[in-house]
Image (cartoon, rainbow, N blue to C red; front, side, top):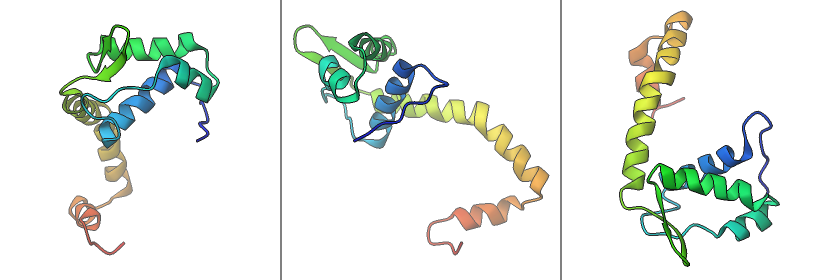
Length: 122
């Protein structure tokens, strides 16, 4: 798998966000081991220090725990914690801009919600 890195954001942050995305998507569950720093560095041609920094931020956020000598593991409740914080961030940061755009475009909110319902005709 080839990953394209964005020049506007530090790579360690992008890597951290990818791991978070995997947790939110259920690809990484509580108790699952993260690939080793060396493995990720080799696979994506990154400096191991970059990978370590991303992993350390996950540890600092209590999403991953270090088990000395055996690796990094997703902590119990990491997915739920991420969902709660992402939902809060969405409502605080993204939703107000969406509501303003909907208002500016004169879109009927009820019609919009109906069109987003499962099985709705687009």
